[in-house]
Image (cartoon, rainbow, N blue to C red; front, side, top):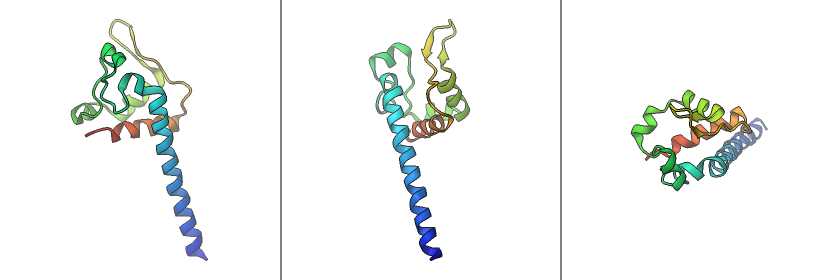
Length: 109
């Protein structure tokens, strides 16, 4: 009986991680892909205009710390001359933002 309960709990936990990953991909597609591109290369018209970095590049990924990425998503980004580069995504929960940052890490080639 204990094995059954443990097995059920493991499947439930696995399903939760799968749902979070799906939610992160959906949030990426809805909020980020317009500029960063579906694969994170920043190769969209808007991405080129804003100077989006190629998030598939291992060097770029190494330069970005999770805390900075979380802050950028929460607060947005501005250029040195106060031009908005990325708007804040205030509708996302802390959990969704962390999942989004984890998704960005999967883009590295």
